[in-house]
Amino acid sequence: MKREYLVIYFILVAFLVNAQKSETTLSLSMDEAVNYALSNSYAIKNAELDIDWAEKKRWETTTMGLPQINADLGYQNFLKQGVTLIPSEIFGGEPGELVEVIFGTKQNASATIMLQQLIFDGSYLVGLQSAKTFLKISNLGKEKTENAIREAVINAYGNVLLAEESIQILEKNKSSVEKNFLETLEIVKNGMAEEQDAEQLQITLSSLENQLNKSKRLKTIAKKMLNLTLGIDINTELILTDNLIELADRNTDLNLFNQNFIIDNHVDFKLADNNVTANELFVKLEKSRALPSINAFVNYSKFANNDNNIFFSNYDQKWFDSSLFGINMHIPIFSSLQRSSRTQQAKIALVQSQNDLDEISQKLKLQVATAKNKYQFSIDQYHTSKQNLALAERIEQKEQIKFFEGLSSSFNLTNAQNQLYQNQRNYLQSIIEIINSKVELENALNVK
Image 1 (tube, rainbow, N blue to C red):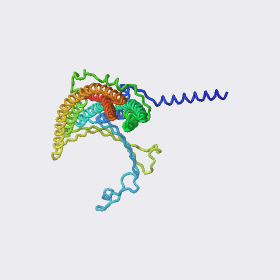
Image 2: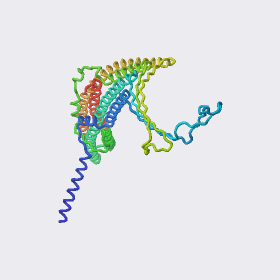
Image 3: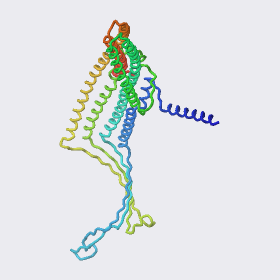
Image 4: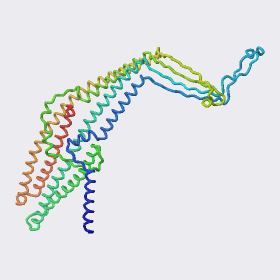
């Protein structure tokens, strides 16, 4: 019976462990990783908050032209009332004499409610336009962030795959060299090879072990970096479902070279163009400061006076009404050319933003040409590296055969092995270059 309980216990423990593991494990393809990051990365969350902030700012600006209602409550208690001297003859006294008089009650209370409405203000109208432009810029900022996140995720995902593929190749190389080393030791014992042949292979083996350990550490860091880019805990177990070799073929898209570049749709151009619009509004804002502003208001007040502080307990307490309606007009007349100076500054900033727009247009065109050239080179380099790797593998295999047949030296074998290892690295790096240069070209062309 006790044994059955133990079996059930271990089954439950295994179930709980697997359940916990599934909660902290994430399996993603490259496309899934991009989509995940576009919803969960820290930069995207902040970009969305920027949009929310801009929305609230726009409403704040809008409310400045809407009715404003305020209430004021007041209470005064004269600890020592002021004394006024008036001619005594008012009360029938002698001319030339003064009488001490205290006006008003010791305490008074008031309640006022006021409605204010902006009728006209040029800066308010410009402010509304500016708030809309700022919101648009915030949305464009999110779009630019999405492009950057997409590129960062693809690069980070590729780096993890590169580390994994490097580990597999290094383990294969290590196993091969280890086998050669042990066989060479036996040959040396039999006196059919020199000791330095084994030592040469031992050097190669030690170097491979170091590189393998380094690659394993780099894989750990690369995974944490990818997790950070995705917006998840860096210790979350992440399983990549894509294969590096398959990604090389999927990311070879010659149609990109024929893709039309519409500069007006590029996010960087739209940002620069909106910056021009914003500076045009700043010019309007400075000019509007010379226009009059008109405000209207109406209020209603109640006042009470008392010497005994019984405003609300005394039903005989009188409250006196008062109401006022008015219109204020503020007319700027002369500012010692301050407004003119600020307007000129705004115009200079506008010209600068127009220059920036022209510059970004040229930069974007150059960026597309550069990205296409880089992508073409990466494709060519990939095919060349693939061919060179096949050649290096054949050369290394031939050198191994010649070495164990006593027709070649360990030095030649080591050179062939190092050449193979270098071509393996070049091949893997060429795949990463295709992936990275493709997303770079897509961002340059504004292709999603």
